[in-house]
Each structure stands twice: as C-alpha cells, then as structure tokens.
Image 1: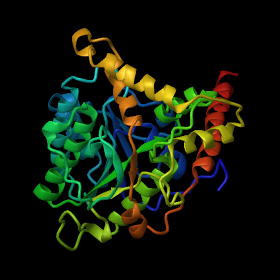
Image 2: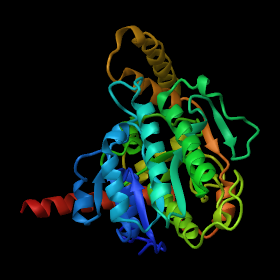
Image 3: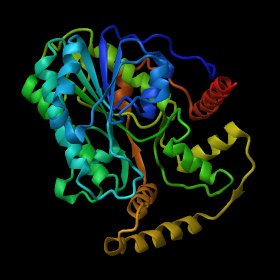
Length: 378
C-alpha cells in the first residue's frame, strides 16, 4: 500500500455517530475510509475545516454541559433515527494548563447522559465502540505484557493519581453499565496506547520530533501504533458488529458476532514482541533521512527524576502545564507493553502497516495538506 492509498470505502453499511469526531484519529479514519455514513459531534462550536470540506454532518455538543444542550442531542437523534453504531472517542486534553480540575467528572456525567438518551431514542442502535486507553488500568504503574484476562486486578478508583487515567477507567465502566447492563446494547472497549496520527499537532510525533536531532535510545518497552492501523481495527469491529443484533447474552467475555467487551491493540501484530521506545525514534529518523546526535540514557533519566521532584511542589505554586508535563514524563519512564493476541485471534485478516510505513505515509499525507493549503492561497 503506497503512501496515498486508502483502504477504500468502509465495509460499514449503516450510519455511525462519532462522539468526539474532531479528533486526529477521526481524521485518519476519514483518510482511510472516506466519509460515507458518518455523523460527527465535538465540543467545538464549528467543525474543523477538513470535516467541513468533506461535508460531514456536524453537531456541537459539549458533554460537560449536556443537560443544558439536551435539545441538541434530541434533535440529533430525531434527525438521524437510523444510527446503528456509535463511536465514543472523547478525552480531556493530555497537555493542558491545569489537569486537576472537575472537568473530567463533568465529561463522564455528560457521556452517561448522552448514551442513555441514544439507547432510548435509537431503535436501530446495535453497538457502541469506545476508543479507550491502557490508561484505564492506571498508566502511572509499569504494565508488562498485560492482557484482558490478566491476573492483575483493576485498581481501586481511589488509587488513581492521574485525572486522565481515572477518566478513561470511569468511561469504560459507565459505557458498559448504560449500554450493556441497562439497555442490552453490546459495547467494546478498544484499549490503545500511543498513536501516530495524521495531524501536524500529533503529540506522539511531536515528541519524536523533539528528539530526532538530539536524543537517546530509550530502552523502555512502550507500545505504539499507527492511527491507520487503529482506524482499520475500528472499522473491522464496526463492520462485524452491525451485521446483526446480538443473539446471545452480553457478559464481560461475550458480545455480538465474536466481539469481546475488551481488547488491547497497542502495537501492530507485525511486531511480534514488544520493542524499545528507541525503536520508534529510529524508524522516524529513517523516514526523514535524518542525521542525529545521541545522548546517554542516564541524562534523560535524571532530568525526568528532577522534574518530577520539582513538580511535587507545584501543588503549592500552581504553575500551568507543570502537572501535565510531569504526567507525560512519568508515563514515558515506565514499561507499557501488552499482549494483543486476543485481538489478533478475533481479527486475523486485519491489514496493517509497519511503523516505518506509517511515518513515510504520514510524511506524504502532511505534505498533501500543505500543498492543498498553498493551492487555496493562489
């Protein structure tokens, strides 16, 4: 598959509502499968330019104030009563001035309300797919080859220190409770790790760009994936889910058409074993044919430790972005690799690209964005 080739039209036939459709993952999905049978919602008052250019129906819906916007949601479901599947792709900002706020709680409550309205209003609704995260099982602890039935019990909610991790965990619980338990609508939580997406501002690619000229080979095993791979995985799940209503009970291990409630898909199947984070930096440099200078790992280790010590005092100072930066550095200082064999077994024909192919394709896609923008200015 060349850099500009997409996967062609989606195998989905029914209408899909994407909650959080302004995300970079949603844009990659559109790059891969087009815009057919998609409706987006987002917190922004207007859709991003790329969504407008594609003519994707868009509704501004802020989950944190959903009770005040209930009529918007009601109108949405009245306008599109034939929605068959819903994608939940919302999350608070990973890099924000202040992360220890109640914003996360309001988002969870709004999502709970929205899904309840959808399950009651949409008679055709068959399935809900949640773009979840490994953060749901506490990203501030090391995670080594965990799987869906791991012996590691889910942490107690009171033990979570990061608001983002707590948010993802609570989203999983509320989606399962509302959809499966209250309304008998199957759902799936696709737990993802770092994703390299088709956007200039991709936080994961931005981190690589900061290290590509001067950086170290970090030996920690951290799973990363291509947003194109994730988009294809999501489309495969949605396509299978809409084939027919579930014909069996929807317990934690069983769902519609052999779709489990929880999957890890944190790196390509092409990577049979976890790889060091430094591997992704190497592949990024290859894609851009870069020359670089290596620095010792201990220098980075001491910097992260020093920053964490300084950040521990920020509770008294409240400097912006310090807590968010500390969280991201602490996550990167621990192993995070998973056993994705369950997803590989259930979706063996999934077409993937390698990490190097991802970076080469992304480079070409971003250049196509720039060319299109320059063309409009002429």
